[in-house]
Image 1 (cartoon, rainbow, N blue to C red):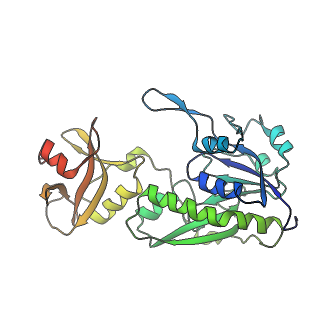
Image 2: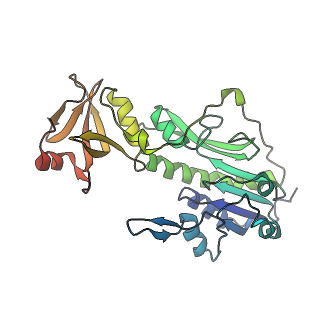
Image 3: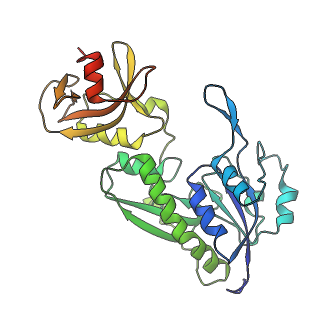
Length: 309
């Protein structure tokens, strides 16, 4: 146990932009000293396949910290470096690779994780997307200790967030990242000094998510407009949603419901914009991208391509 006025050594492990506001909150908190950062290796990106640094690496460099970027954590290649860091606690946020138990157990007080759901709901890789896909009225974020099972460890704290029903994946991800940043430093500090005791999850209520792939982006107009609209928002911006018109993909970024009956898959004009009949109600396609082209409005699509047959 550490006293509340001692500085706590923390190791940060993360990759995506979701982690950056949370890590920034740790960097700005005088109760913590960052002893190291681990992130994924630079990866080819864009048409030219030039190496791109992860958002966490870009952030760490602004703090004058050169991160460790092992290809794998399972081979023990950085174990000695991590031991020398003498971390009190490690924090994992959206790292994206398996972390072996040996490394998780190196810090004196173990390793914590931020999971953007109200655990035990939506364990696994796609909690934000599932909250939108399932039409939840609320979601939230959880700070937990990592154990040997996925998203199974005891909880340190949680925060709820009420959903409007209009959020895209990126919007909700950004919101939950900011909310997490507000609660993580206090939870970790109180846990280390012994004030906050971990609480076991109710494993009987656990639900699970699977990895979202590009195959999940295919839209079938026989389904109702509400569920299709959720899918468009849940997969925006990646991997995106699409339909097929004349053998070519039409990507869809934004759509809105209107009440209408008709034959599913029938395209029509609504107030100058492209719309399509669904199994229940219809969707106005406000922003689309023809294959190989730029994003345009539904109105621009009609003016350039006409009404699909």
